[in-house]
Length: 214
Image (cartoon, rainbow, N blue to C red):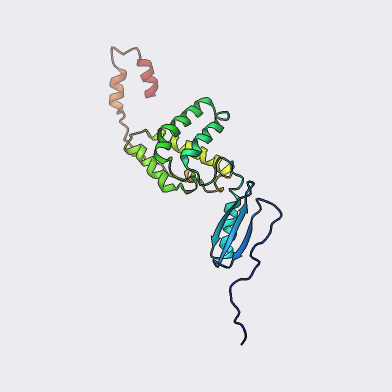
């Protein structure tokens, strides 16, 4: 009886690469999955199991984007671990006033609220919920909330540049801050302006008010 041929792919179990950090894709027969694997400088490796070779190629790209991350900062580290590292690295690069503001934002707000979240799992929804918390429950001014987003965007942009997270995965770049309701402005009518300008006893700031009205 002829042996029934399996339709499962039959590549070699492992495909050798020319060096570390280049990655490989191979078929693991015992689990019937494709494996994307990248060797690390330490001698260990990172792997992802996928249902198809195409998915493994995509997974390999994501793995390769993280192997050159700073040794102290793996992709699955928490924000509470990454942000102090980022602040230390940014201290010499940022303007002192900007650095002081960013440090206050991270230490006093972001780390207490989001410090336990994994860097590679931070989502747009989590950030928008955080911005909503700042705006509604803590009553921070719109510009202050905007500064929080700027600080997070700067920190996560560096995470992309250092390949701690893959490029294009910065949620702060697309997260929205709460919309500020417009408040109607109260202005003088023409008769009111005439009355004001005709004041027989103007204050010492009268000239400034006139300039403002003009």
